[in-house]
Image (cartoon, rainbow, N blue to C red; front, side, top):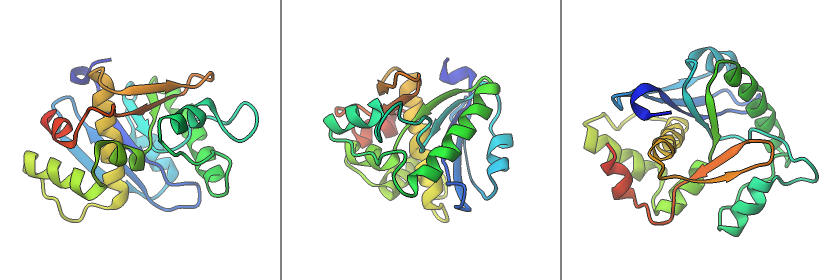
Length: 193
């Protein structure tokens, strides 16, 4: 899958009871569209088929216990992910697995990520990452929600994945968690655009 022929969609998925889901669509020319969707069905219908979709939500359940291979391997790398069945994460995991089924039927490639870990690994925060992109691309930086900024971070990881620059942890269920390598800086990510 190449960036030039497909859309990359980042999704900061709201749990079933949260009203806001941030979505970032990067087109084949790296044109950006940000929006906040308030109904889960809007998310399902909005994402076009054959997109690369990176979600900030667990896309599978543990095969046993409370942790998946993804959480276990991520912790070894200093990436702290909450267990998918812990408290409110259970609703987010349910929403993620349901959306995964719908999007796989639309022939989308799905990846899982975690914006907070992305920011930590590249030494920034959501506002700084968004500001650097906005300045470079001449995009209006105001009135962007935290959900949209997190969706933007997920889409950026999709770009790194397409460019074979992302690190991956693959779960036995086939779910792939993506994160930036430690040698990729904020400046290097911004240079992709």
